[in-house]
Image 1 (cartoon, helix red, strand yellow):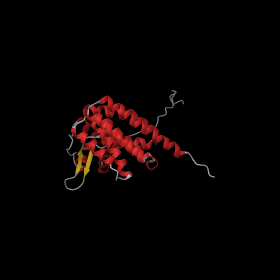
Image 2: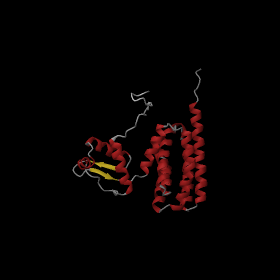
Image 3: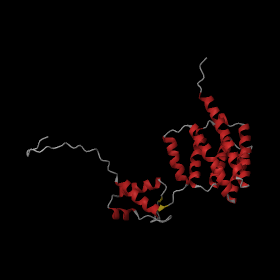
Image 4: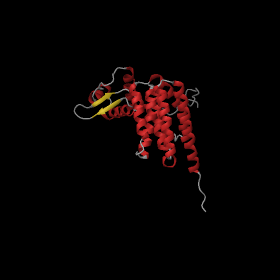
Length: 254
C-alpha cells in the first residue's frame, strides 16, 4: 500500500489477545501470597468489603476469586457472623481431587490405573516399613479386622480394602504418594466389576496378603514389604483384567 507521501505501508495483522479474567488475576495474587506465607494457615483473609476497596474490583469478582481458591483447597468459606474465607494448607485430598479430575476427564483406562498402582504401591509399602508409627499400625490392623469379617457385605469388604491400601500410603508419610493412592484406590474401586470379580476365594487371598504385608511393615522389613506388595497388586491386576476382558466380549445371539 502506498501512502499519500509516497512511502510504502506494510499491512500488519495482530493475533487475538487472551486477556485474563479479573477474578483469575485476583485469585492468582491471593494464591501466591498464601503459598508464600503472608497469610498463615487458619487466619482469615480480609473481608469481602475490604477486598473490594483494596483491589477496586467488583464484589462479584472478589467472590469468584474466593470460590476459585476454595476449589483449589487453599481456603474454606464459613458463613454467618463469624464467617469469612480462612486459609488452609492443601493436603492429600487436594492432590487426590486433582488426580481424580484427570482420570475422569481423560477417561483413563482401567489397565492404566492398575499399571500405575503396580508402579507406586510397592514404594508406599517400602516407606511404610521404614517410617510407620504405632498409630499407622493401629490403622492397618483396624482395616485388617474389617476386611476379615465374615458377616460383612460386599460393600463393607470393598471399603475395608480401600481403607487398608490408603492406610499403607499414609504410613509412608509421603503426602504425594498418599494423594495419588487416594485417587487410584477410589477410581479402581469405581471402575471394577466387583460383583463379577470378588468371590470367597478373592476375599481369602486378599485377607492373607494384607496380613503378610502388614507383618513386614510392623517388623520394619522393607524388602519383604516391597516383595509381598508387588505380588499382591500384580495378582490383583491380572485377575481384574481377566474378568474385564471376559465380560467385555459380546456374546453372539443364538
